[in-house]
Image (cartoon, rainbow, N blue to C red):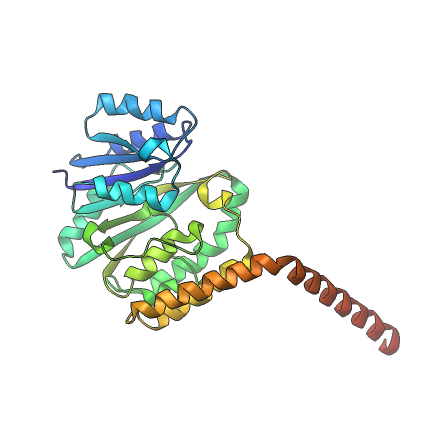
Length: 297
């Protein structure tokens, strides 16, 4: 049995998956298996992966039944199910990890046996406009992380933003995923949703090293899935409510999810009216400002 299972969800990244796999092959620590689950790709990525499977038996390819596209949540769950190791490292199919990624994290596990979850800093590359958009997020995230002495439980760090920016920085003990709810109200926020459920129960460790290269790609899952700002705000408010309760009552969180889903559906149904009212309010404010200038200036 390999000591670490690297789980990769793959979907139409034939141009990038080679780099991802090569970064795993280049690891200084070699006792790993790479579980790649294809999520119904329509490009040549499956054939690329199959060639690597022939070259190295540690690389294994799986598909959903009938080659269906099931989404990120189902794809990761299948990968975890197929993994044979106690430790799972996630790696997205357009990202890469440094040669010492596994070695450094395993050193931390040996040093702190109570740790269940390790994440690291990232180096962003790719689309410069997207990188610029994330810079403010990382400034806040790095400051927040600097205030914590690790190992630690970190529910307070996940209330406002996700300080764990991508699946590709995460390595965790597989068993802690046994009881998590994978049905995120917002699919693109699946990672934030998962980590928030674990943050009050297990010890986390932040490794302040850029061990992951995170590709900023406008066609990536997180950028393709367009969600309204209102929906995201509702999700964050409900998640904060859950975190404030310290995960003591799971049934309460189920109620929070249902309320969130109802609110999202209601907003989607009436969002045109909301936008009309918003435009009218802006117009009214504009008229008030003009009248004020005419009467008093």
